[in-house]
Length: 336
Image (cartoon, rainbow, N blue to C red):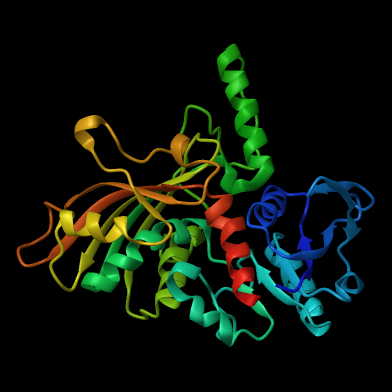
């Protein structure tokens, strides 16, 4: 494969650094790497393939000669800079929310809708982390039985708030262990250590948060299911890395737990860990620092009305890897 000039926009952040690692691990054909970040990081270096590569300031002119941009910055920066990169001939894979629901921008999980990449106009969006982790196992079940409705509760790690979230949880754990007051908690609204926070994102008029609505709105676009119904509750939990989700899915056609296990065992990006008798089920500790979505606790929804086809399961996945960086690099691989 011909080498590409690849820029990492937001190269100093948690996701940006993970993108660098994923490019190395997956032997992506990088002819030249261009790390981009804020002015205060310009001149510093990142390590790539054993060499130190100097960081450049993220300004429009920095995208000259770039083939592929992997973006790990916030919405405002993405809206400002990515169109400038496209003007200069780059194709951008964006991890922000800025373009996800734009009609002309593909929103892609390669295990589900890789074909949508071909419709891009220069920008391809990476979905929300919780959306990716839930949809990777839901999609093969949908193909078998027809997905109608999803009830999901997410248990999202501090890593979802980036490096500030990871640093804050570590600080708070130290305070709690020492018997000291935690004090003000940022970027979280409340202390996270020894606590749960049932809010991620701002509340909308319907009393759901922006994070909760992403699962429905993004899921409809990715799966080409405009009528998909989702009831989502997102909770921040005192876990460093890897999100977990409890999902109840209603289908058009009958599907048994055994059938679901067989389908998921053969599904790309999924690992079935489901032996309650041996206390085997997915957990954040086991799913961190790798790319598969672990699925277990697969069982009938005993609350479903007669005639309703419904299953419940539990899944976990690394938010920084498959929930962000790895998914973006997978999309870039299709561009080759």
